[in-house]
Amino acid sequence: MRGELVHSDSSKYYQRLEKLQRLICSCVDGRSPDELGELTANGAGGSIGLYFMLLGTGTVDTMSNFAKTLKNAGLPLGAHDDDQGRNSGCGANDRLLDILQKMQSARESIAKLRTGLGYGESTTDMDYLATVQSMMTPSEESGKSAGELAQERTASLEHVTGEKATHLVRQHGEIAALWNSARDESTLNRSALSETARSADLHKDDGTEMEIFNVDAWAFRGTAIMTLQARYGAEFNAEGAMIKRPTPNKPTETEITQAVDFLIDYNLATVLVLGNKNLEVLHRR
Image 1 (tube, rainbow, N blue to C red):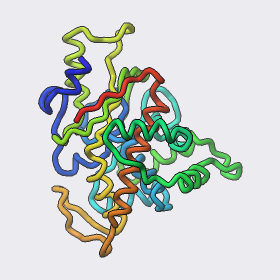
Image 2: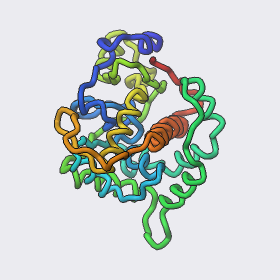
Image 3: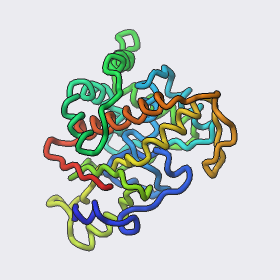
Image 4: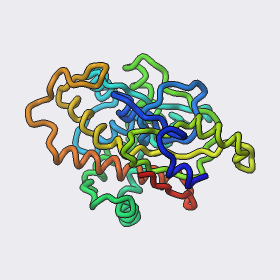
């Protein structure tokens, strides 16, 4: 089943994405939503992960301002909660501090994973990452926990978009993490995967579905470019075409590279933090 999942073309378990669907809006979480919506590219935390990307590459801003910037630019936004009563319900958001720490403490492990996946050396600035971690750590003056700050980030995004976050159901049960760098620009269709698993009686021993973390790494560069362009004043229409150009000579190629590297490192660290040590990493290319 896992080999079939990795080598399948984009018609069986995957759905090809078009236009703004290719911008990361959905999380890598393997659970299914209670209501099926439009499929979009997957990255840790969905749009909230892109907010962390900008923080990690030098843009100090609030979640609310970030969401307003993307919305005003015509770009979609997305996040999720769940039915388990755990802070925001998104591990990539709730456990940000653990993930930032993992990016620093597990540099060698992440470097090996990057090499195995075909990436070069990371440009993520570890000193600045430590600064971001300090910035995002709750202060005694605030009187808020990390979980409450995570809830506020989700609430800020919901307030700006005027829409509730996608609601995921059940406990986590991911059996693998799929790193999807295939050029067909498709994302894992979890409904199609679940249907196949049910028909082939491939449920786990406890009867729950065979869930898969899915990271659409093919979407990192395009997402980073459009997010940075929006940061510098660009606007887009519903087709994803630019209708207002960003500040001249912005973003720079260095900024794009740093943003992409952050997404690679952050998503790998998220899988390491949220998955158990026996979680298999599958590579679709």
